[in-house]
Each structure stands twice: as C-alpha cells, then as structure tokens.
Amino acid sequence: MSFYKENGIYKSSLLDGVHHGFSSRHGGISTLPHTSSLNLAYGRGDDAEIVKRNTDIFARAVCGFENAGQKVISVPQVHGCEVRYVDESDCGIGVYSDAVFSCDGYITNKKYVPIMVKIADCVPILLWDGENIISAVHAGWRGTVKNIVGEAVLKMQSLGADVKNIKAAVGACIHKCCYEVGLDLYETAESLRGDEFCRRYITYNEQGKLFCDLPGMNRELLLCAGIDDANIDICPHCTACEPEEFFSHRATNGIRGTMGAMICLC
Ligand SMILES: [Zn+2]
Image 1 (cartoon, rainbow, N blue to C red):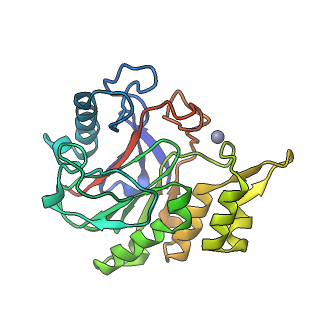
Image 2 (cartoon, helix red, strand yellow; image 1 turned 90 degrees about the vertical axis):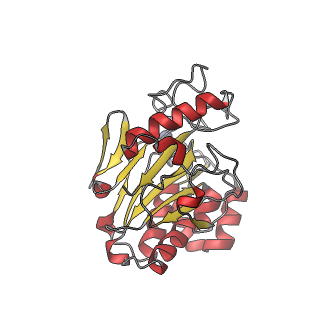
C-alpha cells in the first residue's frame, strides 16, 4: 500500500475501492495569502460562499457526483473521542446547514453521505471495511490519546464490519520532526495511555526538547484495535515541513486555512 496524488488529491491505494481523498492547500478559490487556495473551514477569514464553493470543488473531485458538496457532513471538532453515526438525514450539516452537534469522527453505511474531517497538522484517518462501512476521524493529540481511532474501529464492528478487513489510511499531518510538545502533554497522555506507551512516542532530542509522534501513536492504537499491519497506510508527508503544500497550524502560528479528509460510499 502507498499514498499517491491524483488530480491534486492525496489517496491511499488501500482505499482504492471507495471514494476518498485528503486535500492539500491547492485547487480552490480562496485568495487570501493564508487561506489560498482550498480552505475548507469557516472562521479562517474566507467568506462563507468561498468555503462552500471550495467544499463543492473538493467533494465533487472525491465523490464524483454533481451535488456532493451540498451533502457533505463536517461539524465543529472538539478534540473529543465521539464517533457519530450519520445518514442521509444529516447531509449538509456543518457546511450548507447549521451544525446542530459537534464531534471528531463519523461513521456511516449509507451511500451518497460524504463525511469530512478538517485538519491543519492534526491527524486525519479514513477507514473502510472493504464493503459498505466507512469512517472518518480527526485526531489531534487529545483525540489520539483518548483513542478516538479505536472508538471508530469498535463502532465499525458494531455495525457488522470484520476487523480483519478494515483498512486505515492516515493522511498528512505534523510528524515528530516538527511536533515539539511540553511536559503537560506528556503528563496528560501518560494518565490516559500509560508510561510505556508515551515513552515510545514522546521523546527528547539531543537538545533536550520533547517531540511527539502522532502518526506512530495512531498506528499502535489501530494495531491494538485489531487492524492488520498490512491494512494501515501512513502518508509520509509532514504538514509543518511543507507549508507550501499543506496548511500547517504550527508552521504559521495559526494563521492558516484548513484541509479536509473525505470518504463516501457511492
Ligand atoms: Zn516536519
């Protein structure tokens, strides 16, 4: 398995049988220097109409049907671990209609229900059981150590997915090279995941600074949830290393647009 780029969108060969994609910062119509050009979130400086049109562009490219943008579900994220079941009745929530709930993950077994998480350094994870169950997860460090990805796998199994068939694609995010963290993060992570887990992924460099490996943590949590190693694909790109290609919160001190990771059965 591996990541590749098609029409400006990053995809994993593991998920080739399902409509999915991870955006870069390119291909949209935002013109502000910090949101140019495919900003997919409100509240970053773009007019709402621009965000809607960018969502239309990305959703159409990922899903391949005409009004995909109007159906996208993407609500405010709260660094929690709720993975919410959604269906047709939720379509449009958070983009074309008001966000009546907030959460960091979605799961569905319905067609034409595009689900999208938003990221700019945090970890986006798209999951598919090889048949008709999909999930999208946003995992910052808080969601990661709360094991939102394990929660997604459990929810997929409760809908009938066979864990041996679940494939997980981890999109571009901030990697250990750039993710310097404080002791407070270590302490919170340790309280939830234990010292041994944290020692594997939060380590000091030669200068005595602490760095955290979010994709590594999520890989281990996926393995613990029962996913085969061969069914986990991690995008090698670090968002903070490549601010010309990706929106990065760290690399820009928070002055940035937002990318999306979307998956849809259709
Ligand atoms: Zn980096």
